Length: 420
Image 1 (spheres, one colour):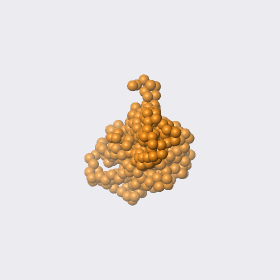
Image 2 (spheres, helix red, strand yellow):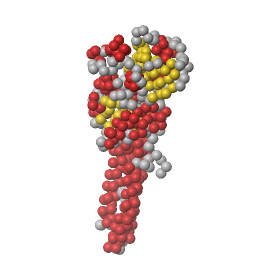
Image 3 (cartoon, helix red, strand yellow):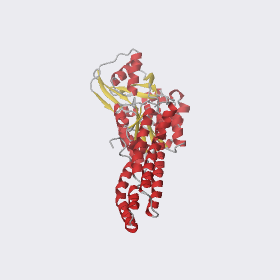
């Protein structure tokens, strides 16, 4: 009863049915006793039930499945999570660090003629982003260290999740973040786009007009209200992302959505590579918007899983039917998630879904194994009569058989892997 599987719908249903069947069983046994005057036939009816086997086999199936997922490097927090995972029909992926590798690398700094040098822009950005636990911030800090750039002390700062950071550096008001973050603060970016049209976010056909920036994203830097430059970085798509999404769509018929705080052009570029329909791409989505999208999908009747690893994903993770993160994700995301991929391999999500669906199929098998024999025996006990010993064998035997069937996948895995 203390195992983390007591909250599954099937187990709750079995408990409710057990309570509801007590009175009908007593009434049926009373009728048979009154009409036949044979206590043994009444005892046989009281011995048989449809619920005990389910109450034994369901927790066994979930415990076996949880053990199975753990052996595959997947932490599933409860049987309820596993049960919901088998029902998922829609999966929403965050982009950065989830569908992409998260190994962000800065590739250069672009500046505006007549203003700060590339070294000065990098120094301001690295100083602002120091000790910020975000993949892009950490990449900028690494690049600055590699380039031997001096890091200035940071004064008061205000970090806007999903947007950027505003910080005081040596009395200067520095902004580092997305184009939206800077434009909201009144910074004019036109001077940059005039000299570097390839990086303009409104570029309609980046694959044709802007080949240089095809897989690059930008972090913008402003000082005292004036734009100074942009830091280019790349974050390659995980090699397992494409086959994962193809299998989710084709094998399981799932609806796949892409969520990102990045601009629409780059979001659609990633979606095109991964074969995600444009209608299911949500760009420039910030934490509250990500949560709203998940809530809206659930409101339409979909069972939604959300996969993300960042601090700004935590709200959406909390609203999903099943939330998935990585062992190397942010502390908040990891603690919020129902499923944690301990090996940080996105393909493990397929294994988790396969195990969940196999467990669901096992429970359906067990239900037939328990209900079938008990139903036949109950019919015999009510009509022609059945010895109580035979009724006991049928009742207990079906429960034991269902319990052993629940352990079958785990035993098979141990035999195949040679572990005991």
